[in-house]
Length: 215
Image 1: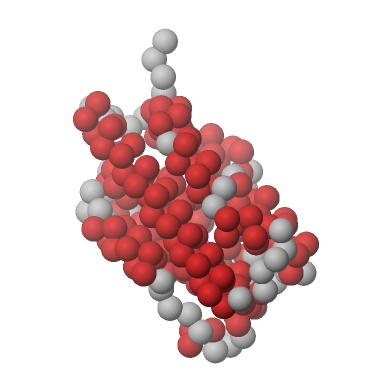
Image 2 (image 1 turned 90 degrees about the horizontal axis):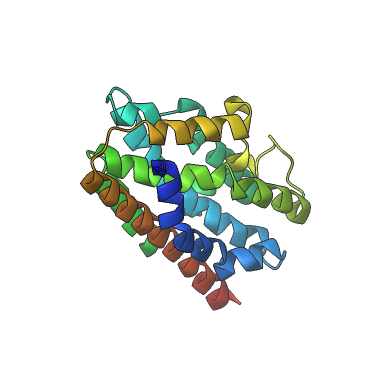
């Protein structure tokens, strides 16, 4: 029985996925122990990462392979701007800056933007997480900070334009499985997904250091 690429990808990166989810910053956040501005630090880092990721998507929209993983309904920049406005107010742009770890992540996204497999790897790492565990995070943040769906604060996690999330994720996996890849390219994409998890986890680890330093 041949294992699908989406299953191979999930299995090969499961340890990295669990590591990212267990990062202590998220533990502190979900426990309600962080001030709104400390939550805003994560929103800000997401903003810089998604400006890069969605920018890469726009550049690859016409590519026969990468274009199948360009979904304008997923773009997060405007949602993150609303969230940052809710947390920091109208002068939010003056309150945020990319952390060193975020700059490294953005640099890697930019570096692989011309490689369809690299773009897909980073897109898969971020968006499939947002559409899955991110929905639980949204529900908890609404309870902790009183944000309302569509009112800013947690709009990053709202994907109403996608419709059914399970159906969308199944379609996404089907597109992964339909990729015409040789084994070398499959392994290269898997390695890039693992790197993407590592870089995203380092962003969260750095956020925890910022929180501790401010305590």
